[in-house]
Length: 389
Image 1 (cartoon, rainbow, N blue to C red):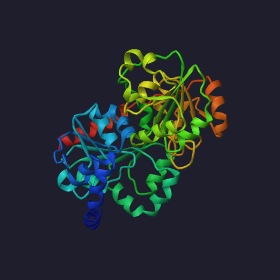
Image 2 (cartoon, rainbow, N blue to C red):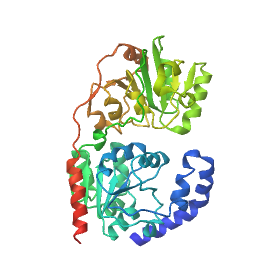
Image 3 (cartoon, rainbow, N blue to C red):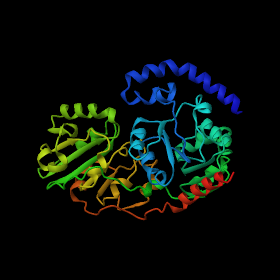
Image 4 (cartoon, rainbow, N blue to C red):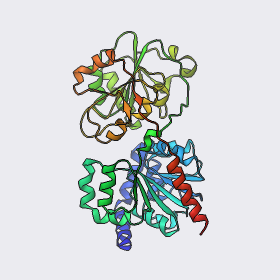
């Protein structure tokens, strides 16, 4: 079965290699990641480490930070934002090579830790073949994905046969994983709830009320702007979810004839934000800055939740600063994390958004901080087990 799968991977690679090579020149966000993953550009070398963590993108990489710092770790990721975030706290970072390269690309480790749903069969199989224990953490199967998992249960049964232990987010996730052939499954809260925001800058608190539209998606900014009547004593920050959309949102603000400034053009924000932030609206067009502004905000409107299709975004980071938090009702991908936060205000009708922003005062807070010690102990025990061989 593995041999057939590996042959199919090579066929897929041969078909897609040239289109992907071209795409890497036309899409900025893929400029480095596609070349590194599919052509090993600046990605031949991989450092030896006790623990190999693999996570997809920015939020997932942030979530494994506290775990990775406890061990001799290396991190692989599939996105540019994930790679950049990992480089902030780990020296051994790679883009994950495509599966056809993994048999000769992947260096041995004592423990492979996979985050959520990064089910790369060759990564898991080759790590296991080279003597690693394989752990899957933060595992979940959403209602929307469950049917697809069942349709390809033969494939997931093969993957799960090589995973030594799984930490599932809930009892429902555990039951679904066991049904799909997982062996040893423990229930453990979503570790994103243990995320400790790290500020890279300490901005001074503004005299005006600060509202943030956070992690917004295409068309969502326009809906939110139409719903909000910004007052003279208020400032608004718009933080698009994806950096490739910064220009799109800038053009939207121009089309709406709104007075705004881009964060990237401000020079002395950390020392004198009041003076630099002259316009009523700030377009947050730099990565890694959103958490710094969460720390001084009054109201956070969480994007990705005001129309169907996205499924919401992690509220934990914003809630860590006990702001007033407002979300749309479409949060199916983040229900468990929303359950970890008290006093979230849901807005079903955008016509109510303005009133909620201006009159709500109850601040969100995280219900219970998650203790990572049991998971750290599990990883360490598996490291020690490999040492004794």
